[in-house]
Image (cartoon, rainbow, N blue to C red; front, side, top):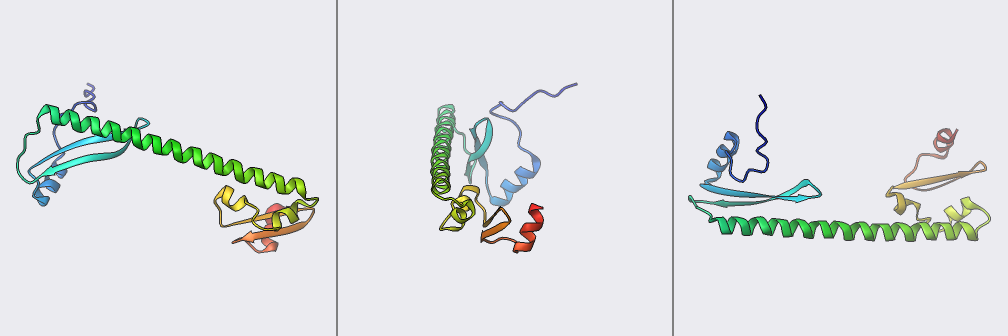
Length: 151
């Protein structure tokens, strides 16, 4: 039957096509450590040497630890980016709601200044249709096409 799962084995054979690639580069030895973020491969720490090189166990462990620290840093950067995006989205949404509260005409509130919808949805254009009135901002279809989409 089943082949053994070798995914966590530190030393294993290299694919023949990879050996050809290394030979073409003049590489005699290589070492690779996976950078795993959220249980997914994010990147590789890949080391080449032009002559055969034995890397002691302690150095291999140190490289593995370096990739784990790097993975933690990448994860923290992702968390920070997500928090900034949530705050930006919250701020834009609050501004849109405030503008709508201050206006008797939601279409005019959309038309006046930067509605924020385009940045909220990361789009090149937006259109609002209310009581038959069409207001378009940015790159949008023609008014007749917008009306056809709504109907």
